[in-house]
Image (cartoon, rainbow, N blue to C red; front, side, top):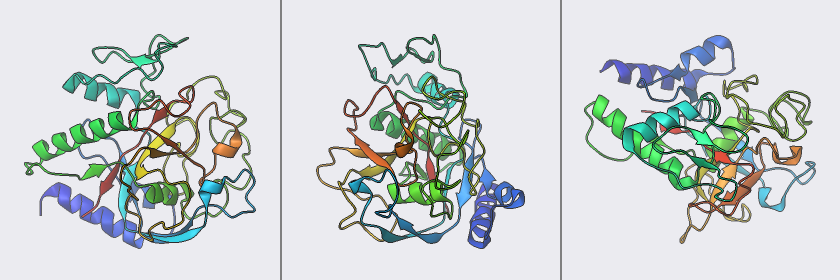
Length: 300
């Protein structure tokens, strides 16, 4: 068995056996497949109740009805894809995202010289990559898969990297908890970056991806800072939602689901169950909030 496959098999074994979130567990579930690949964390299989109860403060109708979802073990980015990681993609491919707000000059510079918008000249490289639509995220994932296939002499094909499904995202964000946020019911102080989170970045600027403590699965920044794209098509409620965790599709898919809230959102959006939708090419969500993403990976 090749070395990387042995590592991934060990991670799959670790996530299958994981019952807690000790430092040792997190270390055994973390891997990085190539120099330009994001750092990944193995997420254990399990079941959870997706959505929010009617009693949760700030709840939106789109968060129900609650339903049980079964999740297979998978891997998820330890952090949002960073500006530096996205710049590596731009420089390697020449890909150029569209401006996310032409009026405010919110755009990635060409060729791959960083994201700029007033009052910043260039986005710090440990910020989450933002000002991105769903197609930008998918293009990055396709490049990541090409790199991995080439490095491992694999035949061209789909995966193993992809955007997480909405169910996988919420399962990972909750990390075994049932409260509105993984740290508790209330927003608290300095747990995330939002408009009212009590951090020094609140409603002012993005924060670096590791600025706050991780959740029990070892994931950083699942709530606040930037919205995160998922693979699912937008549905106005969970009526008819699948019991498995693969993406819930629709034809035509006019919007995709965004999760996690952002630096300029009020706390009701900074909840594990909160959700929004945006067009694949952008333009239909709050671009002052911006959007980024993190990648998922299938395990053997």
